[in-house]
Image 1: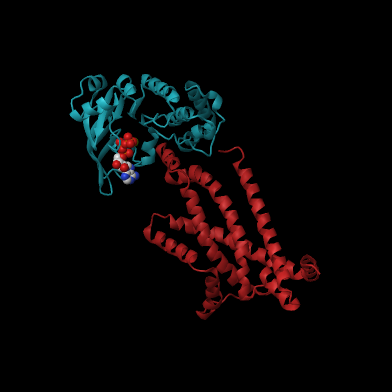
Image 2: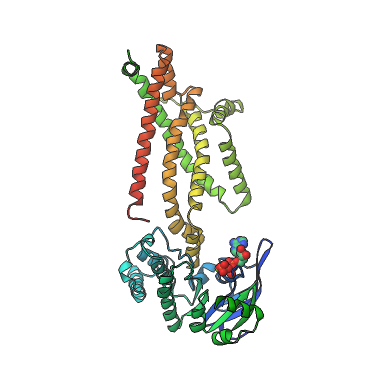
Length: 245
Length: 231
Ligand SMILES: Nc1ncnc2c1ncn2[C@@H]1O[C@H](COP(=O)(O)OP(=O)(O)OP(=O)(O)O)[C@@H](O)[C@H]1O
Ligand SMILES: [Mg+2]
């Protein structure tokens, strides 16, 4: 296990009642790394990602984040979650609040940022994703692509060490996928550490440094993206790529 | 004399009966709903508690209340409690306090169960993604509840609570059987004096309808105000 991995996963198991979804996952993530996770539906990709910030509680195994095992009940998970941003397929913007409030509430409430600082930061980040003019809009007034870009900004507002994406473009109309992928690509270029569950093979291949094939609760293959796509080894990955490419 | 003339005549002559009835009906309903909301909120919290025995207790209470007639519950409170030694006291200056107390206790115990379900389903109707998103950026469970879920749940809950008030106004007519001088009770008085059954009942129906209709209008006005500017 490499020393420079700030996030390590050791023999992670997760069951839902009798259904074993994660059957012993071990891997690690380095800072500034962009990792894609692909695999067939039901293979456990979302469950794995949600285990990383304990939205799902693993049955056994360790998740070592910045040197501490966050599965340990004594750890303050709220503190660790602030350092892990998450972007959901369904955006999940707070429906009762406008864009600005969506962005500044957590930094102000949880990190005790002064309002001016939070607003300044929100406007700057909104500008970077091309949505500065929607600062007063409510979520229902936004398109899916706009919602997702704002959801990304909301996660960035907490200045996380790593961003988790669970199929961020799967709920979008095709013409809006590009605008969200562009934002993600720029994040990657800026050095953000990203773990991305995706069906976008081009993103996995061209943007991510490494790709993981998660199938039936196992990591079947895990290597640098160009090798992953040019020389897949596992027969299951070969047949999966045949189907999706 | 036409039916409507007869109604008008009865109402003019006995309007003090009807006014007193309306007053008592509104008092009973308002107290029942208020107490029902206070205890219903607590009951909803028990019902959603992490502690299994509390949850079971609350579920049992809610199911029992919703599965038995209000009439039976009322009789149990009014006749049953004194038999086991629990007596509502009579208080000077408030005539018939013990009857009122029994009526309000029974009605609010009943309303409590329905309110608890209204609140629970209002909270559960909020998309679970909202709670998850809040937790994922570091809100504690109670912060996420307070700042993200509840503000959205309230918009499901308030209209249903208003509806509950309308239902309570109608159901409260049942307290006349334990001798509370509500609108139904006073209507029966008027019938007993005049033998004009149908016109008297028609007056009561019109008054009940006015109360529930105005209540309903008030609620939809509040709903419109609340949805203003929000999604
Ligand atoms: N909360 C839950 N309760 C019970 N079963 C669940 C739960 N969440 C997921 N599962 C099951 O676990 C398995 C893995 O689900 P998961 O969502 O992790 O798959 P996935 O790889 O993300 O698939 P997809 O590509 O369709 O999103 C599925 O069989 C799913 O039905
Ligand atoms: Mg998934």
